Structure formats: C-alpha cells, structure tokens
Image (cartoon, rainbow, N blue to C red; front, side, top):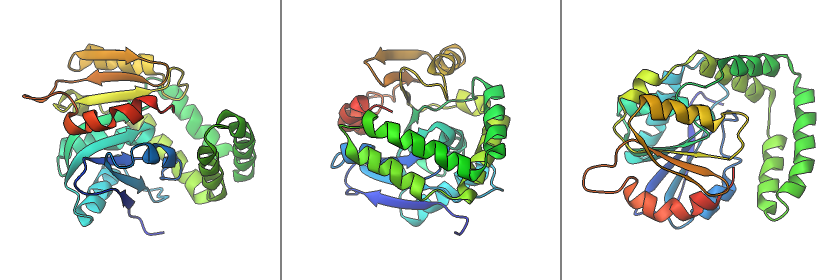
Amino acid sequence: MPDEVQMRVHGSDNLPTLVYLPGLHGNWRLIGGFREALAGRVRFVETTYPPTLTWSLENYAEAVEASLARMGITRGWLLAESFSSQVAWPMIDRNKFSANGLILAGGFVQHPFGWGVRLAERVCGDMSFTLLLRILFGYAKVSRWRFRKSPETHRAIMDFIEHLTEEERLAAKHRLHLVAANNACDLARNVKLPVYALTGILDPVVPWYWARRWLKKTAAPCANIKSSGTPIIMCWAQAPRGGRPGGALDERAAGPVSSTSS
C-alpha cells in the first residue's frame, strides 16, 4: 500500500462538508453507522491512513491536506477521533485546509495520562498478532449482544477484525508513540475556530474529565457543557462573529451526532 491517505466521499457537494479522521485503528471500517446517520445531511469524507512506521504528526497532516486537495475539497468541518485529534491541531495551525470548526470525538490536546499511553504502546508491541486477534474476536462475540439492535455495527466490527494485518498493528503502536511524545497545547491556544468535544460518559481511553479541565483552564472559556446520556457534548472557543458555533453543520448534524453512542 502506498504511503498516502485514502479517502471516500459520500453525499452531494452542495451539503456541508464533514471530514472524518479516524482513531488509533486508522481506517473507515468502523464509522459506517455514523455515516448512515448523517446521510443526506452532510457530505461525509472518510479517511484511511497507511500503515506507516515513519510518519510524524506533521506528515499525517500534510498527507490529509494533499488528499483533500486532490479531491478538490478545500473547506469543511474536521471530525477528529482520538489519535487524529493530534493530526487536526497542526492542520488548523497550517491552514492549508480551511476548517470551519473542529469536532473532537474522544480527542484531546495532550493526553491526560501519558504513562498510560506509553504502557499501551509497550503492550501493543509485546502482544502477538495471534493473541490480539483472539481478544478482538472475543470482543466481537460480546458486541453481538451489545449491538443487538444495530446488526450493521456488529458486521462492521467483524469486517474490521477480518481485514486487520500485522502491519496495521505495528502502525497502531507507532501512533501511540507519537501521542505519548506530543504536546499540542501551544497550537490549541491559538485556535480561533469553534471546537466541540464528543465523548461517552465512561471513556477509559481518553478520560473526558481531565481533557475538559485543560480546555476550561487554559483555552478560551468553555460554554454550553451538556450531558444527555451518551455522548457528552462540550463546546469550546468563541462563536464566529455574526453566527452560532457550527453554523450550517451544527444545525444539520446536531441530531444524529447527539444520538449516536461511541
């Protein structure tokens, strides 16, 4: 697989554009249910990263920008899941892609527990691929009951596991290394765009309470912190002059986003 970002576009270019950047897993295989929830309301751009072991976060940002440019997509909202929050901050700072705003899905500025990320990196490196598959297939059996009302979600999980490779396991380990070493605080302090944070009430990977504390203490005043089951929705930064935070995307997508659990 060449070292470039792959992208697929769903929806008319007359709709607000939402660019999905995946989490540690690095691909679009687990986002299908969310995409279907937004069908007809946004132009949904989904992303898959290559299993590279050499890219920096800046390289990730450059590659995403290059793929968007090749597709003629120059403006839109960024939806950055977990790891990709670390890609979104340099993208906004570089301003090669004109972002209307940023939505963090389990995202962060600097991970609140760096030691936990380093531990996860070590475990990911030491665990055999065979053992990883056994664990994931075990989770898939549990998820059949958990997502019994959403069989397409269970099918997506099975599809993800069946296409998982040793190269992607090593790429995930590399991404953990990038997260552990990164501190995007200086970049985040300069962001003038509206930023939203979506998280489950219980998120053991990126505990939202500590991530929110940094935003409230260091960044622009945090407002409209709402909790309605899952996920929790937090709004950070100032609304653009003359309009509400989020604009057209906020009006069109708020329903499906707020009703989707992570």
